[in-house]
Length: 319
Length: 293
Image 1 (cartoon, rainbow over the protein chains, first blue to last red):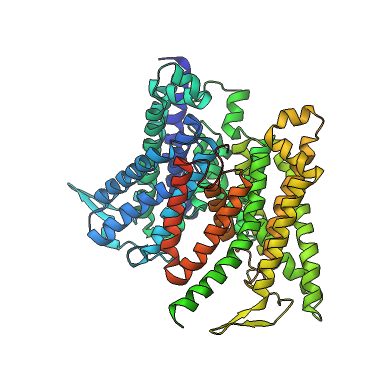
Image 2: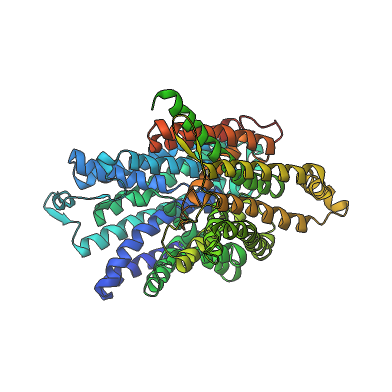
């Protein structure tokens, strides 16, 4: 194995081991926060796959997150399926929506792609409000306690138990992190990066770039859907806030902060932003001001983000 | 009220919406056409115009008409200054790179919204209309102020058209839009033109905000709907095409008035949004625009 790859693999495993160990030392409050952050960081990882490695800036990922959230939540709530099937339905919903949107939206690029995804996402958000009879709109609904308990053989899971919840969130994040790590190191990942750097040249080299972009969007949608489904099942709340434009902007912010096109960047960005907002909220309710200032400052003076800068300055082997 | 007068009322309401929308969307369209910048914070300039109109007119409680006139001048100027500042501090430093500027204007949107929430509060406040007569039709009475809005917006649209098509400044702006590099080679200060266009676009939105505030109260979230409608208008009209933008504003404004009188607003919005996304994908030059986007 290439030394850079081995070093990177060791780093990823060390980060995951560290996250596993943290649950035994963290106080309750931070323990609960970190479970939430891990799910949101998975969402950010899905977003980064598209923005960071394929160069497509979407302003509509909230619809994919919400597809997972509602796919899992409504299946559990209305059809009474168990948590595992609900999760699978959520992932498939994210995947299916991403492919459907991709077939249309990927005919555009750049600014038009941003606006088209924004519009589709807005339509999805309005749809969750329109079918308020099922989704209960803004108010949302809480999943029943029984649906979050699950038996496999002799193992019994209760997703409302903090420890179980943390480890499921970690499992999800580990799967997303390692999937992106493997994908970006694979030949497919190389083609995606080539598309990001110069799409015309990649086409000229004989690659069908539309298919690769659709593949990246589909993978990004599946991961976002998985994060949404996990959010619904682990925190038992489903509401249309998660489909609003704000939840399309947040992953963009997390990825920009952590480092666009770095596998561990989404985690770092999500942790930092989550705690910044948490601290600010103690003083003022206008935390969106912080989001705005952070966005402007990031594109203005810190476009590579934290890990992007580290990679450029000190560690070129970072994936 | 029977169907005929009902439709007439809907058309009147639609015409008011159309003129206000035309002003707002023209600003967005100018900024996109000349600078190739998609300004997501455009709706916040509209909102800022309305909120500042409340602030200015509440300085002169004795005379609503005078207060409103003062607001009509001061508020767009203040918003233009904010836009100029945003251009100098942020957009210019990004070299007007399309994707980075979108992200930056999203940031600007949150900043303006939250600053207004902090200093103005979560209230919805009305501004007294400068005139209070009612036009009496055989079937219903109609606010005379709304007719004033139509007249004022029409005058402003005409003035903007005159500025762009008949003055030297307009010529310089159009030259920059047509070919930035050649314009620069001919000694046109492109950066100053960009600042001017960005401020002008913001001022158009702010004026629309001032005009609307006696009809619709000033609130810190009021910028979102005009933003979305302006986007729809600019896309349907063809990105960067001013004439297309105006035509689209009238089609959309009037149909919005008619639709919201007769149908469920949420469903209408869903269909409109999806339709616009498809137009942008399959007819990027718009439904009414020329082939050159």
